[in-house]
Length: 143
Image 1 (cartoon, rainbow, N blue to C red):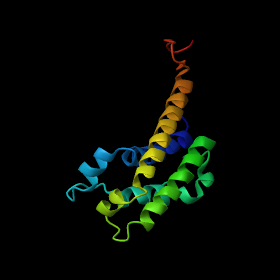
Image 2 (cartoon, rainbow, N blue to C red):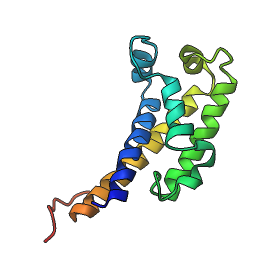
Image 3 (cartoon, helix red, strand yellow):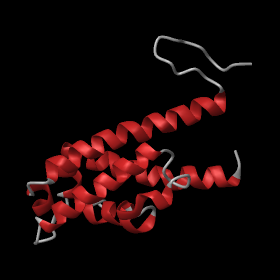
Image 4 (cartoon, helix red, strand yellow):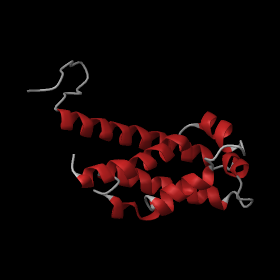
């Protein structure tokens, strides 16, 4: 694996984790509402808008941390949904976000984005190992 590919994978894992957290309401309640846990919604926002991506301008990250146009489109949708939720949560607390009228839309969009990102990662991994992941097939590494 090249150094560039390793760097992309190391940064992308942060995005995938943030997306999975946004797609999982039980995780949000159990982790983000527990003040003793490091991860909170602020951490997720920094991951998606500052540190590893900019969900408002996701197309800039195509081929860097986002693999496909579908990743980009869904990340952009997620940015809009999160901004809407932020506008509806003036207290800027986890509780306020989770209760905002837009929060269910955030969860739905991130659920779709999580599926796409994980599928893209699995396809990339399969291609590296030359494995056919087509449903109904059971082939191992191709020689």
